[in-house]
Length: 180
Image (cartoon, rainbow, N blue to C red):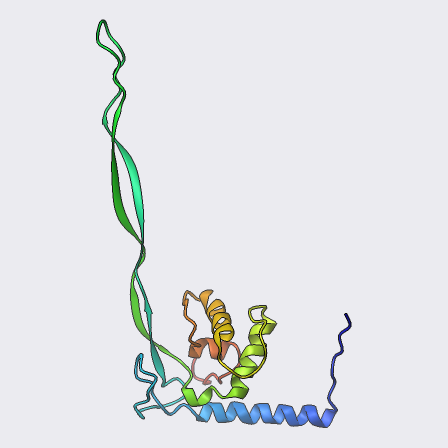
């Protein structure tokens, strides 16, 4: 199997770099919306690229712990009394492994997630070994699964792209006066 690396003339690379810069500036200007939690609708009250939010809900995770408790110890045989085995009682209880959580999280506004941005997301996830599907600009199940795998390391097991993840992947600009 042979692979070829396509090289673009210097003028094309420069034009692509300028387009990427223009897209980044445009993306930072977009986002003057606020996504109502869990609805996918905007309320028009935005004030910057992090104004859109979505509600993240994580259910409580429990496990059942079963233990054998000693009721009566074993008794050895004495005289004409036979030996008696120990008696145990089974007790089960539920333990919380992970508490339930619901919170609003900043996400890129829907108008920011253009097919070009989603293609860039797919390439970024491919470079990290998390996505192996087509780079088609569609936020399909494979892309969502890769987003979830990327965000899982931050403790957010969610297939919706967060603003922080988008900034870390270089998809959305980070305001100069804020740290990510």
